[in-house]
Image (cartoon, rainbow, N blue to C red; front, side, top):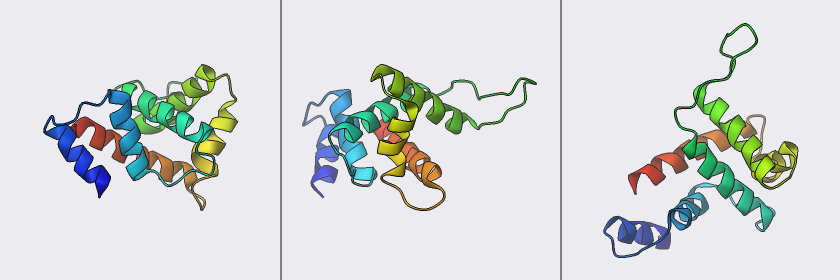
Length: 126
């Protein structure tokens, strides 16, 4: 409820927040709680930010030029890799803290991607 109220204030220019603060609020509202909110939240915010910035980037193709990842899957792969590089961590560490330690079931990455798309949609509405 408080986040919804704050988002409405942002929309009506009653509150001045940075883009990163806005994105953090949206991430906090949509993503499930983290098991390690110190590093995990930092990494997840970075992945979300990079994912949004990568809109329109090319899909991943194999050596024969055939598409093997959708645009959103390609964006997620690149956002995870860029975050790992930025923090000098392995991509496996970033994936673990952002995805595997948080989501359950066999489609953890797909669940994270669905949430990222919700974050992106809400972020663009601001």
